Image (cartoon, rainbow, N blue to C red):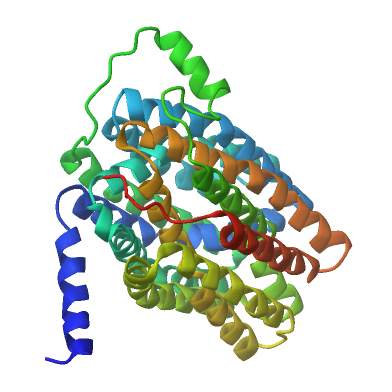
Length: 415
């Protein structure tokens, strides 16, 4: 057997080995839920259709991120002191409620209020990230995370097409509402495996003074008292903050650039998003294997650098083929960053504080998103539709420089 064939076979064995226990449960739940992903693709477009505007889209994103400042802090505390499973189950069923409400609410102010209430579900994010890395051996962590993300997200490749078809045939408002009803049904089905099969990975820890501990979770999150953050981890989280800022500055506005500037229909944009998801699914597992083999930091640096020319090419697109090509190139460039970052962060972090460190990481990302979303909306609306994408390029380069200058992978990886 050639070296290339052996490596391919090894990758297959590694991937199949991950999918047991909690990882299998989360993959199944995520795959079912991701079939309803068309709601997220068109939600900002629908919000503007019923009376909102681009700046309000950004301000809502900022407000949601502010709420996450508290929910993620509390979620990290719960994950480390009371276990991962219960909060994940709560969030799974809580998430069923909002697509149903989106389908009946027609006032943009009420719709915005619902999006903020939905943010409470992020309480479970630290627990979910912690239970994933708890369940994967350190030497295979990036591949495991990437494999889980791929299996969970792959069915969502057809979701934007379904959403675009519904909107094209029933109109934006009616099509979106029908999509929300489907999404709520799928969200309920996805919650069942988590409720029935998910197992706890963290033994409960007695808390001498729960009130003080909870206060520290909300107000003293910057550094767990029993754990000094390594310098590399601090810088890694700082780089992630820049990446979150850059993505939030453009995330809600791709669809407006594509439909209002490049002239695509909603169905054409749905096709582009579906192809992006499919390409990401194809590339993510090999990317995780490369990260584990050649170094997570190196792959992250290359990924950040490669996104810059791709985003600039996107701003020059004025037709379906151009938008599709540049959007796919952007995914091919950036898809490797997230699983490598999560795995490298876990390498720095002991299991006993992993929920709180994950909470800190997500809080920093939420604060950055709170700044990036309104910046993107304001600049798109007042300075021009290409400006948020230029901001994205600058922030990605800054994150890359931080990784190059100030981060080294730990010699000993935490289990």
